[in-house]
Length: 445
Ligand SMILES: Cc1cc2nc3c(=O)[nH]c(=O)nc-3n(C[C@H](O)[C@H](O)[C@H](O)COP(=O)(O)OP(=O)(O)OC[C@H]3O[C@@H](n4cnc5c(N)ncnc54)[C@H](O)[C@@H]3O)c2cc1C
Image (cartoon, rainbow, N blue to C red; front, side, top):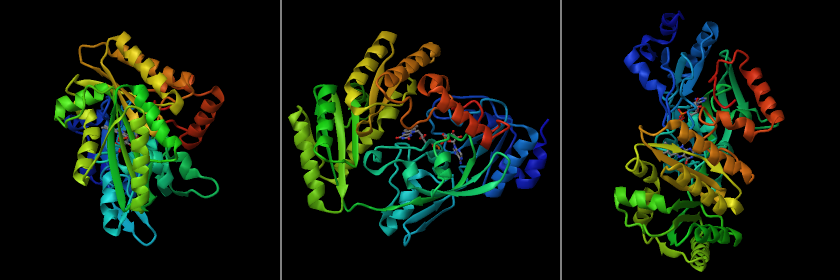
C-alpha cells in the first residue's frame, strides 16, 4: 500500500484527497472517463508538484496531470489506479506591461491572461473556444489552437519559457533558444513532464475589429468563398465554418435568428490598428463571399458581433439537446480538400446512422465533425466511425488531430498516422524523459 500519509504530511493534509466520493470526480474529462484514482493531489505550488512526482516515482505509481479537464481526447483521465495531480490551483499570474509578458502558473484559466493584460492594452491571442474553462497547463500540453490561430498562431507561438518538473521531481527552466527544449514539451500531452510555470508573450489589443457573417446555399459555396478571400491576400483574424446541422442546432437551442435553410455559414473578423485597412479587408471578404452566392451581413455594432460569436460558442451546448452524448472529432486537412472531406464524412455519418454535424476553423483546414449519440447506442460503432473519419483525413494528406490531441481517444490510430521511424523517435524521447513509464501512461504513444 503506498504511503499516502507521508505525502500528506509533507505537503499538507488538505491537499491530498483519499475520500472515494471525491476521487470518483477525477475519473472524467470533457469527453470520457477512466479509472478511479488512488489519490488526488491538489497542488498549490511547484514544491507540491516536486513532492508528488518524487512520491509517485518512489512508489512506482502512475501520475495523471489534470488542468481544467476540458480536454476532448481523454488526455487527463487515469488509465490505471494512480495519482491524479491537479494543477488548477496553481493560479499565480503577473503581467509585465513593459516587456509585454505574462508569467502564469499552469492553473491560470486561459481567459484570465487576457483579462489581466487588457488594462495595459495587451492581450494573449491563443483562444481555444474553451478559454473560460481550460488552463494554461492544459493549453501547453495540447498546444491548443482556436478561432484566432489562423492569423495569430497557436499556444506554442506565444511561449518564451517554461518551468517543468520531471518524472523524478527535478525542476527545469527551458527557453526557446538554440535547442528548443520548451518546444519539445509543448504539445507532448502531459506524457513527459509537468508544467509549473510559463512566460507568455502578449500583444497589443488591435484598435479595430470588424465582423461579418454570411450564409451559403452549399458547403462548396462557403469553402470556395473562404478560399477566394484568402487568395486575395486577406488574413482574417477569425474565419469559422458551421454546417447546416450546427445552424439548426444552435437556432433550436438559443434562437439567434440564424438561417436554418442555409447549407453553411461563415463567420469572419478582421482586425488591426488602421481602420481603413480593417474595413477594406472586410470589404474584400464581403465581395468574395457575395461572388459565391453568400448572403452577407455586417455586424453593425460590437453587441451584434458579440451575439454572432456567442452563436458560434453555442454549438457545443446546443448539440447536447439533440443527443445527450457526443464525440467531438478533430482533424486538419489541406484546404483544397475540405469540401471533399466534409462530404465524405457526412456520407459516413449517414451510413452509420448517427446524426453528425461539422464546424471548424476553416482557414487552418481544422474540422470538428461531431458524432451525436445516446447511452443506448453502441459506443464501439461510434469509435469505429471516429476512426473512419481519421482515415479520411489521412487519405487526403491531413492529420488525425488539429488541436485536441491524440490522448486516449486516438492512440489506436497512431500506427496508421505516423511512420514507424517517427513513432520510434517519439518512444525514445518518452523513455529518455520518463524511463519508468509513469507519466500519463497509456496516452499518445
Ligand atoms: C467546448 C469546448 C471547446 C473547445 N475548443 C477548443 C479549441 O478551440 N481549441 C483547442 O485547442 N481545444 C479546444 N478544446 C479542448 C480543450 O479545451 C483543450 O485541449 C485545452 O487545452 C485543455 O486544457 P485543460 O486545462 O482543460 O486540460 P485537461 O483537459 O485537464 O488536460 C489536457 C491534457 O493536458 C495535460 N495537462 C494539463 N495540465 C498540465 C500540466 N500542468 N502539465 C503537463 N500536462 C498537463 C493533461 O495531462 C492532459 O493530457 C475545447 C474543449 C471544449 C470542451
